[in-house]
Amino acid sequence: MKLVTLTEIRQARSALPSIVRRTPIVPFARTVPEIGHEKLHLKLENLQVTGAFKVRAAFAMLQSMPPDARARGVVVMSSGNFAQAFALAGRELGVSIAVVMLASTSSYKVEATRALGAYVDLYDGPALQRQRRVETLAAERGMTAIDVWEERPITIGHGSIGIEVVEDCPGVEQVLVPVSSSGLAAGVATAVKGLNPKIRTIGVQPVRANAAYVSRQHGAPTAIDYWETIADGLSARRPGEFPFAHLQAHLDDIVLVDEKDIGMAHVVLKRRAKVIAEPAGAVSAAAFLAGKVDVTKKTVAIISGGNLTPETEATLEKLAAARGQSS
Image 1 (spheres, helix red, strand yellow):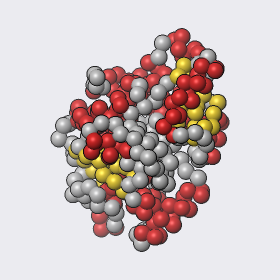
Image 2 (cartoon, rainbow, N blue to C red; image 1 turned 45 degrees about the vertical axis):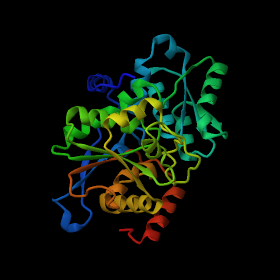
Image 3 (cartoon, rainbow, N blue to C red; image 1 turned 120 degrees about the vertical axis):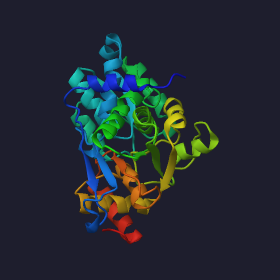
Image 4 (cartoon, helix red, strand yellow; image 1 turned 90 degrees about the vertical axis):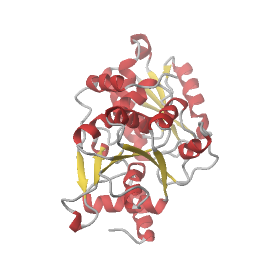
């Protein structure tokens, strides 16, 4: 397997349209005395145009496709944020988009996807078989099926975030990134290590949604038969083969956070940084705030998204209160 290169990531980043934002990195002080001496910095992909990081990869994927494949339209699977990303990219590039989404997906993400012009197919079967539904729907509609877990341009597109982290946060020593199917972590780690091999790259997963963590223990992509987390954006029960190879090559570690850690991080980010992070987007900061990583290093936590419902926000508040550290 040929791994993604820094050159490929740079080329894809330079081809991104202006609608894709270069999101800011801001310092975050856990306490008032820490202001001006912050170790934690936040890469705010929740401020991306669709409210999450995936639009970079969606454009990279569609831009890489042959004209005839794009003309037929594209079918992808998504737990929510990729759906909106492909819907927007398709609208901008004139490509019809259909998305297979779990029936349990947040209604907020479903409606946002439809509002951007995509067709949504709600799927209530086994999560690990979603790609089969993608293939079936593509055949039914005469469209092109894409496996967002395994396509090379997806990892390449995500890597643009890693380039911005190193360029915009001089002296960064550690980068924390959420992990699900592993594409984001793969792209970010590839870019970061390509620019500075001394920077530590650490993936973060919920305790009960830890397929990549388990896979690292086994040395190969491994499916888990459980999934219990408020972080609906981290829905993968198994990492992709292609991105997992990059984790093995470039990721230093994966750490786990529990549900109360995620709730605490969401509330602390909201109250102290005025940042709204969805559960999946908050896990990276949760690892730092819960002391699961070295907190003495200059660290960037990628806040990967901010799309959540009022109901989810209320649950996060309750989790934070149960942890006893809600401010």
